[in-house]
Amino acid sequence: MTRTTRHTLLCTVGTSLLDANLRRLTETTPERPANWEALRRAADERDWPRVAAELLRVPPDARPCGAEINTVEHIRRHKDVDLQRIVFLVSDTEAGRDTGEVLRRYFEARTDLSLHEVRVEVIEALQDERPWDFKQHGLRNLVRTMGRYIRAYGAGQVAIDATGGYKAQIAIAALVGQALGVPVFYKHERFGSLIDFPPMPVAFDYALLGEHAGLLAALETHGTLSDEDTGDIPDKLRVLLTEVRVDSHTLYELSPIGQLFLETYRTRHPKPVSLPPADNRRPPRFRDDHYPTGFRDFVEKVWRENEWISSAHSLPYDKQKGIPGIGFFVRETPEGFELIGTYRRDFGARFRLLIPDASPETLTHAAVLLNERYLP
Image: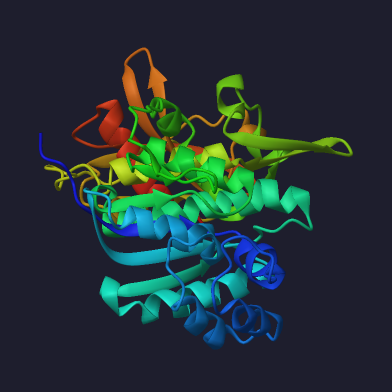
């Protein structure tokens, strides 16, 4: 079996390098480096170029260099790693940005590594002053950012260093690796060696995505929806959401696990299933009903702009109050699976899109693609 060589390292980052390590150096610190006074002075004065320069004089596996530098030094020697790029994922705090700046300068100056790129990515809302924002938005943004880099460079080229940062941040990073098929490295400060977690066969039920593609896309795009917007939420979908009761309404947001669900789908399906142009295309057909303003134009636009849609037709729109805005999802009927679109202006209407391949997998791809193109 051929082993994959990893070129890109996504590294979670804490803030202990400056506060717990360098600013606490004294003449009695165990394993203190010879230049400990210069290091502490530079850290106290917030002179980040000098901090990086002084760190270069210390062995990279020495404890004062901090978890991030220590771990990278171990990872780069791993048999399956040919390190060319590091992305540091730092918290949305002053200390996080400062630590990222020091690490960027340090590794850019490590000429022995011959790195092609060192990047610092601030994870919005990943901070400890507002716990709700941290839990709901910071961790979701971490998942989204990691998923973006893994898709950009390829899951087979990426490894994750989940050593630094908040405990929840480390746990989520490890879960991302397991779900997206990326190995995860971890090193505790008391361990002399590296621990690596190979990818595990984590599987999600993507039929759930097809069935609720429009709702999940709306939650990812708009952030928060009320129960008036979502209608009834089935129990099997609630594990992907966070819900809060406010007055007489329930507000829903995508949870970090929900974001991971979407990122996993995108990573494992980086390109849409082949959707060849349909033969014998027929213009959309509409029942003799009263429709929302712009409904006919929208359906015809979707049909016209996507040549793999053979035709479309309106559907009875009972339960108008439950019809959301623009969205696409897969519906199972006794006759098989159907690709359904929704539209709303003052009131709602539904329509069905017909494509040559009506398999659940292809319909799910189509729903995801159409939501990306047309969700406002």
